[in-house]
Length: 328
Ligand SMILES: [Mn+2]
Figure 1 (cartoon, helix red, strand yellow):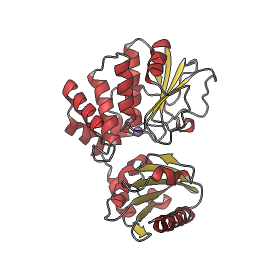
Figure 2: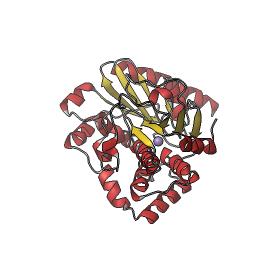
Figure 3: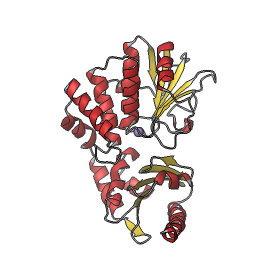
Figure 4: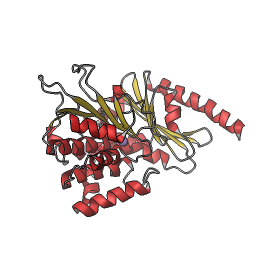
């Protein structure tokens, strides 16, 4: 069931809500969770926001960020679990020790193309620029009154997922909603961008210099790839989230259609970020390695050493590239 009325009805009916977003949370997941959590609380609902990981420092300014717990209170049995910005159930950032009864419904609010509709009720729209846009739809349909804190959280959700309105998902409706939030609640986009964006540690910048030095082109310049090894991370320790934007440099090279960033999260565990321009759907390519995401931004994890992961992905892309050349 993929329906707005069903989703609003679920929110109106229950009293104990467990909200979560994906691990390695981003501005969209966190902003969506915090805005919805605050709105539900304003209706007198019990809300527990849970994420089994620390919140990146660039988002701790958002109202309610301090209320997010690593695990639910021991006595807590939710009447509804709400997953925000999670493409599938395994992405939900709940601690492995926590389980809830199978009869408890999940409301799945998401905009990933690869979303597999794991909820009892799903509010899934790949056309939405951000999950925050869907949360806004949900709150409007339910007649919830926004306040400045919710508006800020939703603005951050939309701004961060559109690369501060630079990516192809910076649609008319995303811009219009952001503008309305700014106007109605006197938000300051410049200030918000500075808090979210310009808070890099010196280590992150030094690490960027090492990563940029690894950029190589492949397949006649169609692919640019780069990597981050454990050795580099030991030299300049950062939270892995701080490396999120690095891949944009590879994608910005003239002629490059696919950018790849291989991150050795642990020895033997390589997280690969995929970015593309309008000519390639990387969510389909990443799916070959069990990953997914959006057409222009996807990810997968490969359990191998760094060199082998690079070889597997480039080998796969070489075959894809040859097949595409033949079709032309
Ligand atoms: Mn998102």
